Length: 331
Image 1 (tube, rainbow, N blue to C red):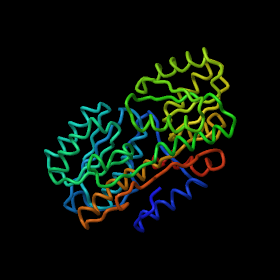
Image 2: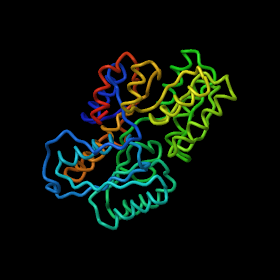
Image 3: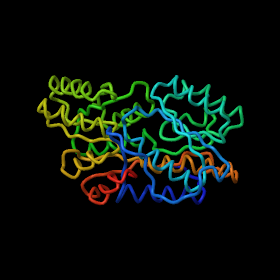
Image 4: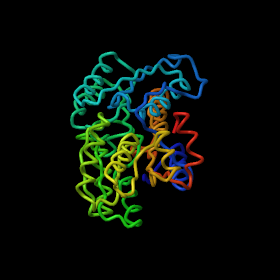
């Protein structure tokens, strides 16, 4: 956590602490939902600003619907024109950033899941005088790339938090499931788990193919009965893991990062022990709002430090309150 914050950052930090102890929630999923918001707002473009939001979203993963819902609401609130684009391929995401530069947008909000591949495009933006804000991925690299601000979870801390809780429950051999190759955020989560439980083993799966995920995990669980916990790094993968556990007869505990309505229901039903939340709606909202405030008033939210939106626990102690928000596509 940061030691110097503006009043706005202190408020976000306080909300994150409340969420940790009480009502944290998150998003995720695969069945695409409509982009949502809570209504109201100003006419698009009334502020005079156009902001490009560029992510590594894999088509069909509705975790990003929460990001977009927050971003859309912020754009309405501030009268911003929002242009959203995405590609899970790092080189193609870099092209999207370059396209935004060429179209002379007012600001760019981007995920930095593969920072080395995006560094050139981000520098092109900053050299052109276009402010860049990072969010969701790249907390350790955003400053080096030239991004002004960052909104997201500390993924290493999130992994350590999950690992400590698993260790306290007696886990000795967790299996950490990485669904996207090269993602610094996912690797940091698994590294955090391993720092708390040394017997943690990583496994790579193809997160864009549910059937392949189930088959890979089923084979692994069938051949290694010592696996006593499974850590999935996204709610859709948790659903796949449940199918693999059923087929293999595994009795491992299942925990996940992020939420969707199905995973939230599984937490309520006791099938998933807990989730680690990063509040994607807040990430999308603050990424757009921070650029608006920077352009309009020169504000620097965070004072050069990342603004944390997580991690926090979602479990049976708070799921009843959170479940309706997962269905509203905002948490």
